[in-house]
Image 1 (cartoon, rainbow, N blue to C red):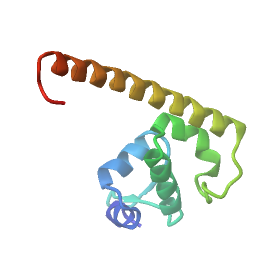
Image 2: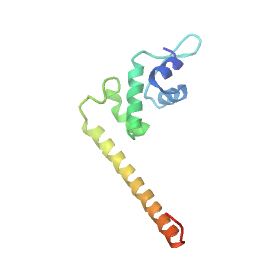
Image 3: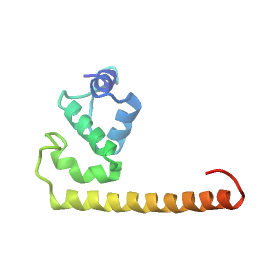
Image 4: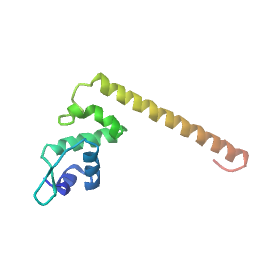
Length: 118
């Protein structure tokens, strides 16, 4: 299938697919006219990449899951390495949330001190 067909089948964009390919997460062959041609199984891989990204992982994190991206990532048994990556990403997100909450609280306090409504 061509890049537009794969994008439509997976709910993503051709640009994202080119980026995944550049990052080594998917591969394509080239047709005689130079167009990218993807194996039909690539759709499963792209859907799994998108699920992992939607769960808060980064493309670098997704690399750890390369061995299982062609199957059912959700139903597959969790690997120790995959769990570690997810736990580390959760810690990063928790730290960001805590930092943003602290900033919000300081701003709310400043507004209260200035007599503004919060």
